[in-house]
Each structure stands twice: as structure tokens, then as C-alpha cells.
Image 1 (cartoon, rainbow, N blue to C red):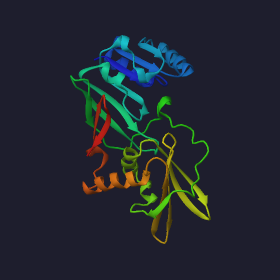
Image 2: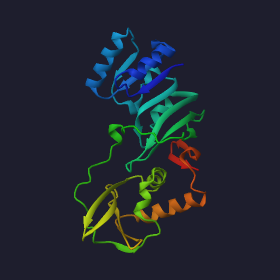
Image 3: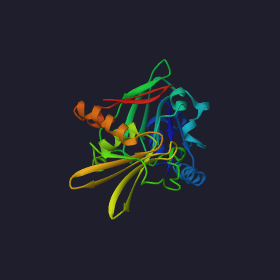
Image 4: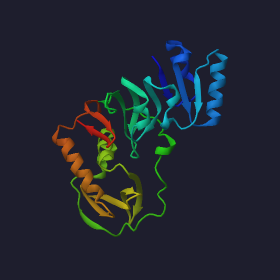
Length: 254
């Protein structure tokens, strides 16, 4: 099998692939030049000469395509189309998908003849550092958190302590980042979508939660709707989720 590895790192897993498949079948991409140079030295000391590329792994490496397997040792918010295009039909992409709320899942996607890919999330709380282009933007100046409409929340911010719940919340508010701050003598949990300018601030008092929202979209309304659908389905675990990637985007089902 021909394998494309996204993220060479120290070169350890690259060496494992070479041992298993032969160096002529292994291509590995590393974004950081210094890291790539150290990995090349590590592999050379073992007498291994796979194809090593320094560049943006999200673009893959079309010169060596098609691949039977694409394996990413970095996290992504959405699976890049280049990985699908460079994997033969029936080939598999193994990548950690997640978001800016700190929850992720390991997706095992099979590439189809029509250029789409789909497959399950595997069990376990798996996390990798997000690829640099997928890191969140700076929050910048915070919005006026005293503005907006206030209501009683059906779901409190304490739900975000749970890994799977955070993953579901990310699918409802994929552009949101989370921070906690103290205002008016109480702790507030804030979700902010920098791109849209939307935000939601929640605080708990006497066992009840209040949310205040403003901006282009009601973030917490979308979160509660998505969580409602998930709970109605019995709150399935991540290994009951499936991921589909098409030209129209990436979707989750459970």
C-alpha cells in the first residue's frame, strides 16, 4: 500500500510505515522546516529514505497520488478535499476531526467513486494539535457583554464539561470559541464567533442558568436545538457517529 502521512514529527511513525510497507511506498509531509530537518536526520540514521516533503499537509502531495491510505497526525476542523482527491476509491483516510471547544474524534473515512468520503468515528477521546491553518482567530476586543437579549437557558454551560457534549456543541456552533471570565461578582461562560460577531454569555445562579445573546446569530439557541436532537436520539457516544464529506461540506450523523 502507498501511504501519505500528514505530519512527520520526529519521524517515528514514518519509520514504522517504512518498516511495514517499504520506504518507496511512504510519503510524509511536515509543515515546520526545523522539525522536518530533524525527522530527515532521524530517518537517515536508520538508513530509511522515504519521500519527505516540507509544506502544507492540508494540500496533500499530488505528485505521489493516488494513495491507499492517508493518515494525519494533526487535527483538522474539516477534512481537506485534497486528501479525498488524492486517495483512490476504496482507500481510507484516518484523521482526527474536532473544533475550537476542545473535543475531537478519530474518523475512519472510506473514499467513494464519486469523490466523497464517509465513515465512523472510532471510540476513545483522541486529540492532536490542530493544523496551523485550522487554529482559531484571535478574539480581539470583546463585545459588549451587557447587550443582547436575556432568557432562561434550557441547557447550562456546565454541559460543556463533557467531551461528547462539547463535540455536539461544536457541530452547532463551529466558529465559536469559549472563555470564562468574572463579571459583576459572578462567573460567566462565553461563546464568541469572531467571524459572525455572534456571542452568548451564560451564568448559573441557584441551580438555574441564564443566557444572554447578541450578534448575527443566536448561538445558544442553535446549541440547545442540536443538543435536543442528540438527547432525543438517546445521547449516543462518539463511536455511534458517522462523518460524511462532500463538496458541499462535512456533516455528522448519529
